Structure formats: structure tokens, C-alpha cells
Amino acid sequence: MAGSIRLYGDDAEMYRLFEAELFVAVVGDVMDTIGLQHQFLPPVFKPVDDKTRLLGRAMPVLETDIFLSNGPTHNPLMTKPFGLMFEALDDLKPGEIYVASGASPRYALWGELMSTRAKILGAHGALVDGSARDTDGIKALGFPCFCTGYYAQDQGVRGKVIDYRCTLEIGGVRIEPGTLLFGDKEGVIVIPRQAEEDVVRLALEKVRGEKLVAKAIREGMSAVEAYRTFGIM
Image: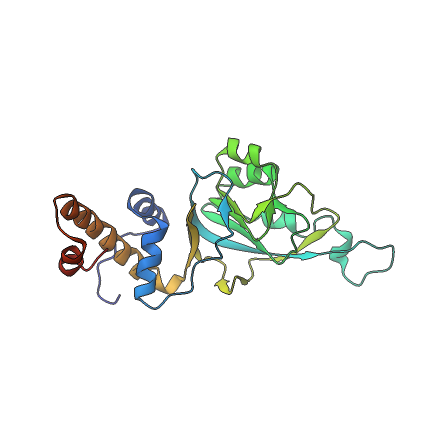
């Protein structure tokens, strides 16, 4: 908002505010109030470990199915194992989230070794529009991974990465490189860059206001009166 005081100077300070005070539901609520009413990913996305949360900037990765044959190919990526997957993984920057979509559900898009490499690079998690595997190993690493299910079948002979740092859509929600993602076991929300500062400011105001509402209700105030007084419920 023009003229408002900045609440943070960089992403690291913003992340600390999220970790200390915010949760997905309150961020979704305030986004509704400013007209961003279709920013949740479908509810099929769940964390491999409920204790982990997703917070960082998207590094989108485009997958596609392949069907092996002995015939000629006009695409050199078809002869490259996993396509550009290793290049995409190695290109992760600190604070980024590997976001993969475009594949069918025939194979897993993420696993323990990928989590190990991503964690070393300082990535903040993975979000795959499909399955993860090696989930016990991912949990042991404490690496945030959100997916639509678990499935051990490998992508090696079934899929390839054909591009990365490209725009994706998941469930009708647009995800561009650098888009802020926030997720917990109750959902994943996509926060457009142009709205970030307003969303953080409003979410902090709401969550701090909710604490006042909770105190008033504990002290005997009715729900009707609480909403009339605070405008929050």
C-alpha cells in the first residue's frame, strides 16, 4: 500500500514474520478481502510430514510424459535421462521451492536424493503436482515436501523435465518464477508478488486482532458482540 511503513527489509525478515505469527488460514482470509479469492491450490496437496510448513519462492519446473520407442526422435531431450531434471535441481537457490507440474500420475516426481541435494543448496522445499516416494527418508531429512500422494514408480523411463524457471498453472492458479508460496497441512496458498506487502500487513493485523477476540470470548463476550466490536471471527 502506498505510503505504508515497510514491515520487513528483505525475504529473510519476511520469513521470520511468517514463522513467528502467521498461518495459512489467516493469510487466505485476508487475501479474500482484497479480491484474491482463487489463490489456494487444490486440497489434494498435503505435506509428507505434517510437522513441516512450506514457505519460499517458486522455482517452477515443467514435466511431461514420455513413451519409449526404438524409432527416431526430433527432440534431443528424448535421449537425455530425466531430461533437464538434474539441471533444474542444481539450479535451486537458497529460499526457493522446486515446483513441478505437467506430468500424469504414472510416476513419482520427487524423492529422498532430490531432497538431499535441494537441502544442501538451501532450498525451502518441494511442491509436486503428483506423487513423492522415499517418504521415510524425506521425513528423516526434515525437508518440506508437499505432494498429491505417494507412489514408488520411477519417472526415469516415463517422464522428463522439459523446462524450468517457466510459468506454470496448477488447479487454475498461476505460479511464476519467484512467486511466494505458503503452505501447511491445511493447504497451500500462492501469493502474487504485487500483493505481498499488503497481504503480510493485513495478515499480521488480523492474527493480532484474533488474539484480542479470543481473550474477549474467554472472558464471556458473545460471538455477536465480538464481531461487532472487532470485525473479526
